[in-house]
Amino acid sequence: MNDTAHALGSSRTLWELVTRRAELTPDRAVLLQDDRTITFGELHDRSERVAAGLHGRGVRPGTVVAWQLPTRVETALLSFALARLGAVQSPVIPFYRDREVGFALRESKAEHFAVPGEWRGFDHTAMARRLGAKGIFEAYDALPDGDPSVLPAPPADGTEVRWIYWTSGTTSDPKGVLHTDRSLIAGGACLAHALRPTSADTGSIAFPYAHIGGPDYMVMLLLYGFPAVLFEQFALPDALEGYRKHGVTMAGGSTAFYSMFLTEQRKRPEERLIPSLRLLAGGGAPKPPELYHAVVREMGVQLTHGYGMTEVPMITMGAPDDTAENLATTEGRPPEGMEIRIVDGEVRLRGEAVCRGYLDPARTAEAFDGEGFLRTGDLGRLTGSGHLVLTGRLKDVIIRKGENISAQEIEGLLHRHPDVGDVAVIGLPDAERGELVCAVLEQPPGAGELTLEAVSSYLRAEGLSVHKLPERLEVVDALPRNETLRKVLKYKLRERYSGPEKQLFGPVE
Image (cartoon, rainbow, N blue to C red; front, top):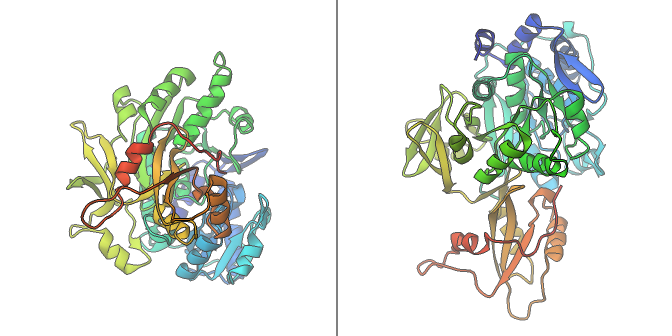
């Protein structure tokens, strides 16, 4: 990390970081979207005006404001405006629906809720009203506006909880993860430390800005003073124009992104897909070693993959100068300040980037050991060079395209179906998605035949989000169980079905 970035990384709050960067390079671009450009100076000034507009709506330091917005310039402005006010913000992924959104609103006790209106064929405003949300306002093209002279002093303490992020984890209901400005700054600094960007780079945010990766990436932009292109909807080949137009040098997101870029590259192997691109980077889902080698060989760029979670946005990351073996087979090394301890095979973490816990105090007590290390539930080992290799998970969670999906939630809904006797939902390795969702069913005597289409329709009707729908269905006479408590042996199902897919429904949005 260069001297300027290191100095900026000492900022106490996100707003202080925005202010210091705006003073250093006010005219340098930070956000690019379509034909719009926002400079660091404009990010500061426009966020202050939005903060004043929010202040006029009654938002004060500590006010809980939830927002469910796509990846847009306006979303970033709203989020930094809330940071300027010292509000507590609760970002919600845009494709979550009534079940998850209702839970997040209730648990966070949100006093205001920003939505995009009707977006991609779904009416978010109507859902918000249906859920009885408070303080609903639309924040897509237009944002609240006001005179910054009315604003109170910016927050000075970066260690107060001001962020509530949501993760499915292993339970039916999401978990509210508590972060501070300092934990998010530390996470972004970890990412920057590994990727080593320069002010000449142009990055990209093609994933949901409401994901924990949103502030993670923005902190990196603020530390190093370079811009990123925002993609409201990522789809190839349509998005390629934006990458090429703005000369993106760093792209990625997760395993699914790598696969999509590689697929496009193979359509015209004799041409560079994105001539300016030098690095693909991401995390959030397992990365097959063969995918790493294919990207480097066929796209002519470096690929660095990392390990993070909502609780700790950046844990380890491959570095561009790592060996090919380490980049292909490990999750990289932890940055300075991130302690990794392996206890009985489980990865445990301690450091400034680690969350403060959960909204539910009981979950917080369970999550941390007596020495303040977070129990991740992931299994792994450290190599002699300090690189982390993940070998499995204690918790029953499927990571599809970087998003956590609770197997238990899907199982609970399928257990209600009259033609389902028992069910096990598992994640299977998939080169494009990282993992795909597979439902393995037992049926009671006399039950009608179940198809993947029928199961998907039933789960949709039950309110399950589209991104959690099974992509594979297997019907068996009996699920494998142990001989003592008759628990289903999911590892046997994973071994059995980790071959060629039999019933695929097609890609889920």
